[in-house]
Amino acid sequence: MSDCVFCKIIKGEIPSSKVFEDENVYAFLDINPASKGHLLIVPKKHSESLDELGEQEFSSLFAAIRKIARALLESLDNTGFNLLMNSGKDAGQIIPHVHFHIIPRKKKDGLSISSWPFLKFSGDHLQEIAKSISEHIRD
Ligand code: AMP
Image (cartoon, rainbow, N blue to C red; front, side):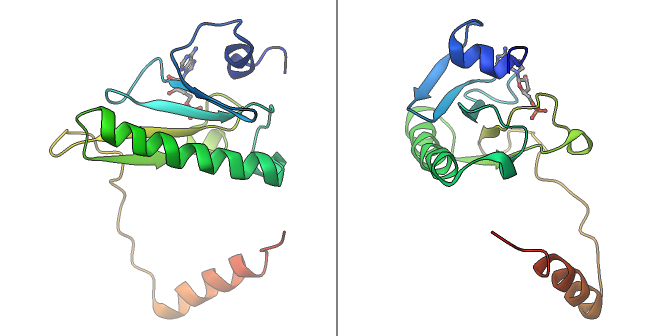
């Protein structure tokens, strides 16, 4: 898409700190990182949601995530990472081009990315929720 920031980065029209590139995937440092080495992994094909990606793009994306996550652990002084995706405006997606964030973590780094309320549902309610999701699973 011509006005997509990430498409422009992939084409080299906007500068980026590139970490990895292959036929289907481009990865670069986030311009407003949550921690040192915070990066974004994006499919080269412009897609707003995961559902628009083909099998090959999807598997390339996850192969790249695995390689890059390993490299992050080996190269910087982090001891873990969060892999996250904001999908949809209500989930905080700002750039409408599929991307995963990898955020390097270390002990007592003060980030609270993975703090959510631990809600309690009854066993029956959990079964109901699981059923309603599983009934919609399709290829
Ligand atoms: P979100 O869509 O909320 O998952 O996040 C989009 C991310 O893209 C944010 O963390 C931004 O800091 C990052 N971002 C936006 N523009 C650029 C850019 N030109 N270079 C690198 N990162 C960017």
